Image (tube, rainbow, N blue to C red; front, side, top):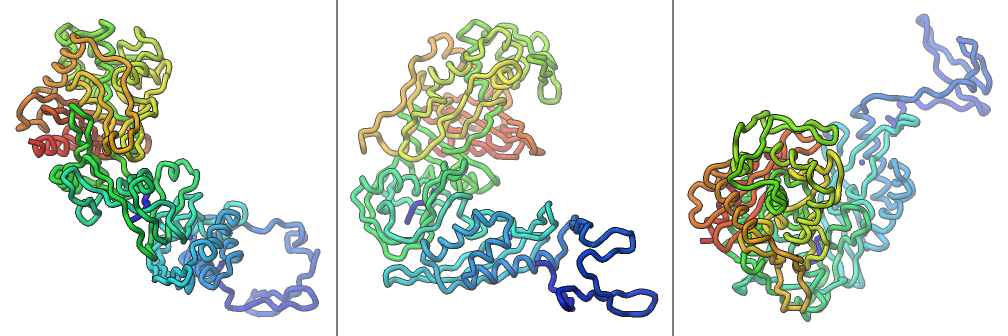
Length: 555
């Protein structure tokens, strides 16, 4: 257990050096001979060799350049010539400390690096070595890769340096350390007392890392000796827990009980396995207990720590704001034009649809963007931010769920960016945990901070919302979500989900992506869930079936 959180081609003929001058082979007119060029000798164009700038090679790398550069780097690293290895990269100042620490701090010796078959400018390689610490030796094997690039200033092929070259679990700024573990291991239990392991649940790793980081010392365990990744201060690494790569000696784990339901966690794992880059969270509405959380990509806990634009699922929060301010009413007429311009941006609906003489309920159910942005001129820049914070408990960075989490962000924005925020774009950022909590708040009528470990375990304070919605607003908001689940964009996914249900779909456009991220949030009885499928497309057909399946599984 443990903390989780890439030489020019050798000349076949070397030039001869004679008296400090280079003898260069000159071929022409069918005859071969030697010409001696010393410093300042005149060239055919009348310039002197010393006056001409060397030609900088550009263009794609040749296979020989890639292979030779990779071989030079790997050979130097393997032989312990750290300075030479670092010099073969485009960032020696970053490469040398990490390569030095590989032997000194990580205590890895007898290293063998074997390059694989290059693919373009990328060269995979395998690593075999031994971690040796205070009389204990243990073999270490893993696969990594490097990429060769051409330096713009002189055209020289070099390894494109990133810490992941040394080990794929490293982010830039991270280090490798072997020694007594920073925290003791933990034995994590589900709500029924069964052990939570990666063998049972494929994506549970980051959660186990977070539990160890938070409760390792408090749970009564004893640290062992391990090779681990110690996280640095990069933007990405700061959101990750330290990670154990190899245990040399086992510690004694402490025990931490979670709120995860084994059957529902298994169901969540099965659902995300069907869709690449998907994540989902299931909550108990009345308490905030996290019953299941799973990610198709197990290396990062997107379900708790993702920071993604939530698209139209944000309209749940926006609707509560418009209803409270009297700017909308479920059954009253509400504009849904093809376009609406605000802050010099022209917004439109999916496929440029419009709803003529429709109600706000119809606009919500069909997810009409302009129905919401058309109200932006009547709102203050901080209205949406306050609504998210005060009613839904979001964006205050004070959730204490038991493991690292991102609590959502709804920054104060103006003009077009404020308008975009109303439909879950602009600067708004959420994850499935946040959006499951939004649905839970609507169903419960008040915000209950989600948690994975009961606050009673360590006496920590959970986040509170400063106010609740009025009864009239809450009733209409539930009506909007219920109608959408039955007749709107969520109807197909929610078909067969019986009981008191409500739902909202979302699609979030992301620069550089051909397809939007698909979102879905819903409740059923005392359960609330949300999911995202990155680059999946419309939420109703991508994340929707995942969420609906979990709500059904919850009984």
